[in-house]
Length: 127
Image (cartoon, rainbow, N blue to C red; front, side, top):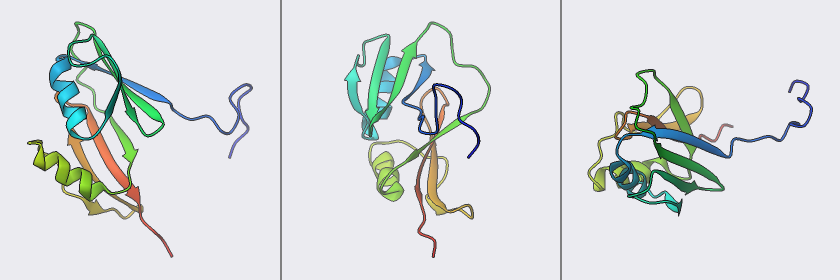
């Protein structure tokens, strides 16, 4: 580990990611279907905060569509295969099936209604 920045230290963590969305109701339904719990807002709000473990995914309607750039955020979960089945059972279509990656994770990818890509993953046990 490198030298910590003053005031940040070695134990900083990302607590929330905020995504711009165009249709809060559709986005709220997508994330709720996958098991995220509402902490604030809801399907009719301009800003919604969803709990994921001890952290948050925020959704915000700004009146501007998300950019055309690419990005992905990765969520470590206990069972990516169970999240994959839940996505299918609620009518969503992940872009990949669960697979073991050479970098040591079991994962799959799915896009939300605005094209933000999520990866649900679990580190593989290595002997």
